[in-house]
Image (cartoon, rainbow, N blue to C red; front, side, top):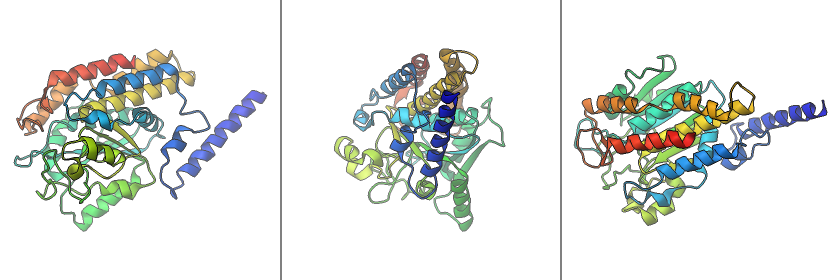
Length: 361
């Protein structure tokens, strides 16, 4: 009986701590969250090892851009905990869209939609309402990506698109999204540099081309709510957390580097891979919570169940990219309208997805 009373009070104190942490008067504190006294952040060693193995898989710098220098040790783990432990049902915003093919219509690249939809899938199966947020110029591609998914409902999965020049009605719609959400995740989302412009890796200002909607304002509008970000080149929203490393190690980094910081940043060779990794990390954490809470089955059984829910199949990804390319989506490196990502054959991304699932258990 004394041990039960102690556990009751320990959990009660943990709940009070969380209420104080998110009382709306201070910024989300990543360290405080990871040190929560009720033990919810504690994970078995095998779960931590699996997430670290996944971090290693996505961080090989396969594109040769220097992204290894942008990795924040432990941030994939912490982002996974935040994502998996989000109270449900909540509203999750997923910001994506990098219109770097500025001379094409649409200017959307193939890195972004698959990762964003993997995160949407995970958020949906974790019990949340999901809104994918992008620019008007990316609308057709993301709408195609979200078509025929085989999961999701119109009540809990939405596409929200905004123009580069916002009307008062658009501003109100953006504010309502920010007010209603509990978590923002950016995956391959263009982010503002020191001068306020959003640049391609080649230093072309996408906003001066009229392509970028100011949805990055959601990050400031929603503080102190947590903000997770995924990127591969330093010019994505959230990369401000490592801006000094972007300036030092990424070509043209001082010009193109995003200065908006994420609470937890997942740097990956390809942003889509980071989307897979965070979805897998959340699945692993949720599996660990379920097994700890004494639900049916052991930890590895729960991992298999949650990975199958939160991650797409290889055929899912093949079909998704085909739908995107059919709407004019292009490889951001080669500029070709084909199912390649960042200049690499689709099979490279499928191999990464396969490796992530194997590492998860």
